[in-house]
Length: 91
Image 1 (spheres, helix red, strand yellow):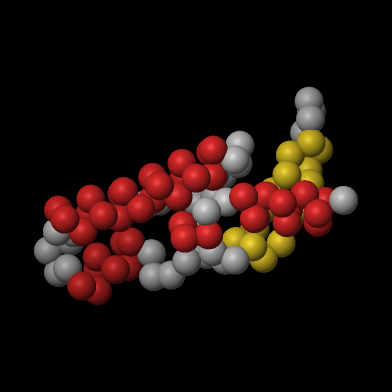
Image 2 (spheres, rainbow, N blue to C red):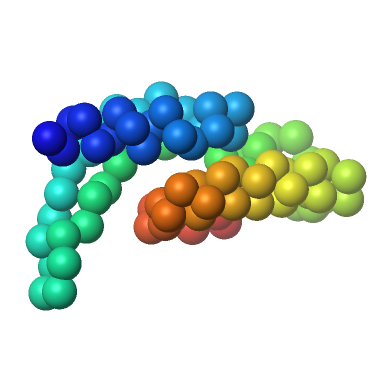
Protein backbone atom coordinates (compact mmCIF):
# COMPACT_ATOMS: atom_id res chain seq x y z
CA UNK A 1 0.00 0.00 0.00
CA UNK A 2 2.83 2.44 0.83
CA UNK A 3 4.34 2.05 -2.63
CA UNK A 4 0.99 2.78 -4.25
CA UNK A 5 0.55 6.01 -2.27
CA UNK A 6 4.03 7.18 -3.23
CA UNK A 7 3.28 6.55 -6.92
CA UNK A 8 0.16 8.69 -6.63
CA UNK A 9 2.09 11.44 -4.82
CA UNK A 10 4.91 11.32 -7.36
CA UNK A 11 2.47 11.61 -10.27
CA UNK A 12 0.78 14.65 -8.71
CA UNK A 13 3.96 16.65 -8.21
CA UNK A 14 4.92 18.82 -11.16
CA UNK A 15 7.74 16.86 -12.79
CA UNK A 16 9.32 19.99 -14.25
CA UNK A 17 10.40 21.07 -10.75
CA UNK A 18 11.35 17.77 -9.13
CA UNK A 19 13.73 14.84 -9.60
CA UNK A 20 13.10 11.09 -9.75
CA UNK A 21 11.79 9.47 -6.56
CA UNK A 22 14.39 7.03 -5.13
CA UNK A 23 12.48 5.59 -2.18
CA UNK A 24 9.60 6.15 0.21
CA UNK A 25 8.80 4.99 3.73
CA UNK A 26 6.48 5.66 6.66
CA UNK A 27 7.55 6.65 10.17
CA UNK A 28 5.19 6.65 13.10
CA UNK A 29 5.27 9.78 15.22
CA UNK A 30 3.61 10.31 18.60
CA UNK A 31 0.33 11.46 17.01
CA UNK A 32 0.34 10.08 13.47
CA UNK A 33 2.28 8.36 10.73
CA UNK A 34 4.43 10.44 8.37
CA UNK A 35 5.22 9.59 4.75
CA UNK A 36 8.79 10.33 3.63
CA UNK A 37 9.87 10.60 0.00
CA UNK A 38 13.58 10.27 -0.79
CA UNK A 39 15.12 12.08 -3.75
CA UNK A 40 18.67 12.24 -5.06
CA UNK A 41 20.68 15.15 -3.68
CA UNK A 42 21.21 17.57 -6.54
CA UNK A 43 24.71 18.75 -7.32
CA UNK A 44 26.34 21.09 -7.73
CA UNK A 45 24.82 22.97 -4.85
CA UNK A 46 24.58 26.75 -4.80
CA UNK A 47 27.59 27.46 -2.52
CA UNK A 48 29.84 25.23 -4.66
CA UNK A 49 28.62 26.93 -7.83
CA UNK A 50 29.37 30.35 -6.36
CA UNK A 51 32.88 29.25 -5.32
CA UNK A 52 33.66 27.86 -8.78
CA UNK A 53 32.14 30.53 -11.03
CA UNK A 54 32.01 33.74 -8.98
CA UNK A 55 35.33 34.63 -7.30
CA UNK A 56 33.79 37.60 -5.50
CA UNK A 57 31.48 35.18 -3.66
CA UNK A 58 28.27 36.71 -5.02
CA UNK A 59 25.73 35.51 -7.54
CA UNK A 60 24.61 38.05 -10.13
CA UNK A 61 21.22 39.47 -9.13
CA UNK A 62 19.43 38.03 -12.18
CA UNK A 63 20.76 34.52 -11.52
CA UNK A 64 20.00 34.72 -7.79
CA UNK A 65 16.43 35.77 -8.55
CA UNK A 66 16.04 32.90 -11.04
CA UNK A 67 17.30 30.34 -8.50
CA UNK A 68 15.01 31.67 -5.78
CA UNK A 69 12.03 31.74 -8.16
CA UNK A 70 12.60 28.15 -9.32
CA UNK A 71 13.05 26.95 -5.73
CA UNK A 72 9.81 28.60 -4.65
CA UNK A 73 7.91 27.19 -7.63
CA UNK A 74 9.13 23.70 -6.71
CA UNK A 75 8.24 24.11 -3.03
CA UNK A 76 4.84 25.54 -3.92
CA UNK A 77 4.16 22.56 -6.18
CA UNK A 78 4.95 20.21 -3.29
CA UNK A 79 2.85 22.21 -0.82
CA UNK A 80 -0.14 22.15 -3.18
CA UNK A 81 -0.03 18.36 -2.85
CA UNK A 82 0.28 18.62 0.96
CA UNK A 83 3.94 17.48 0.81
CA UNK A 84 6.33 19.31 3.15
CA UNK A 85 10.05 19.75 2.58
CA UNK A 86 12.19 18.48 5.48
CA UNK A 87 15.56 18.05 3.80
CA UNK A 88 18.78 19.97 3.90
CA UNK A 89 18.78 23.74 3.91
CA UNK A 90 19.03 25.63 0.64
CA UNK A 91 22.29 27.29 1.73
